[in-house]
Image 1 (cartoon, chains in turn green, blue):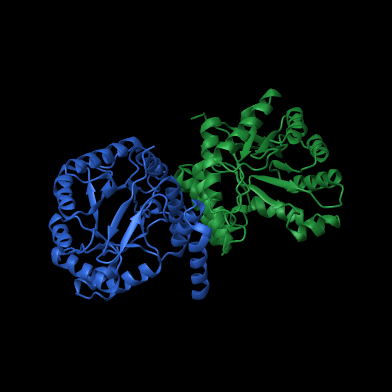
Image 2: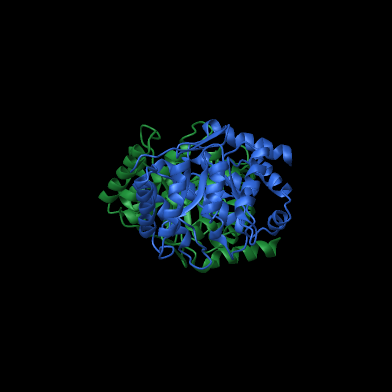
Length: 288
Length: 288
């Protein structure tokens, strides 16, 4: 078993530590126009109120890092991503996870960002490795590595481990340490393949045992096409935390999910005297 | 890693298989006067309607085996346990888990039972091993082995593994195979010790890796003294299933718990095409 590594990300004024002995770090997923028409339309119209709102409510609900994505078809992502980040940084002090598929937008965003960002993401494709890793190195950022490469998403946990190994190795050649790499083993939908959840859980365990790196996952794909998705997602997140996931990208406004994360931390002995659990309970009571 | 073993328990007409590749088997916990005044008073008065009701509703909610306990202070447990079992067998056909601390009541119950019962329980104490295991062997039953011995409940996962090993070895000396032993690693309350959940989860993993036996747990102790216990219990059960638990003793009438078990099975690839999940969803919809 590899030693558990600590990833630190920061804003100008706040640092967040991600480590398997600490409470799970929720990366709030909502500032993303993909599949959210309200955000998409607002960004198209240069209206950042929804972004402000999403930033504040997610932090209030327990997000410790915020993912920011400004991928609006037809818009200038270089400009828009910086505007979205600026908006978020004006209303909260949490570190950002810069989420873009465009290396130029990423470069501009990293140049603007004060602190140590989490970059979302690099993957095992040659094109991605060569475009993203130098930017991560140059700006001293941390980066999410997706377990897919030029051949697509591997169909076994072992093959996803191999992609993780490749990303970690290539990053290392540029001087990026494993502690600054957060691996996403990728959870595909169980509606298409009943073993997709187990495969992702097994991949987490293999990658953690081999490298001790932190693990993220966008855990809501898993339930696509199924009814009552929030129950599947919240249960799966708890199991993934047991497997070794440390910083899921998810929606903390779904109370089933934030509650499952807190209960999972409690069950893993990462909530001394249950204080986080009890504090959240009191907040639920006050809100009810 | 040891091979995963299959435990079969049965009633006169129905067999249930417990195995790590199959859906989780819920052992319904409710037919038990301990801490349930309504059951206690009814049994005291010779009224078995509550027992009948608890049997039917638990099976309807997904219990595949029913725990039966008739430990009423001052009552003749030999007589009462047989009456409770008889009542349950009249209204359902699921296998029973015979739950008593009195070896004479156990002997009488096993003599009456038609099928292969699960005995709840033996532990590592000399007195328990010598009283219970011969009855299990004589009646060809399966047995739950609790990870405690003459020194109490061990404070480490490794020491609980050692008690499991002792129980499995002593059973083996009587010809009871490991497949007929279901280990309960014991989950103590996290309110008293924040690491109690993690210890139980680690013990499950150690015991499964070493022996491949099936694992049960009365998973509700874990949240004793905490608010919103059902959320803790349901999350912990899902994590324990990921660790290797196959047949929790729990209350399937708590929808958070039965839903978490179904979602955990789905996540572990034990629910082909999500059919169990979808069926349960439709049932919830119809009931709403």
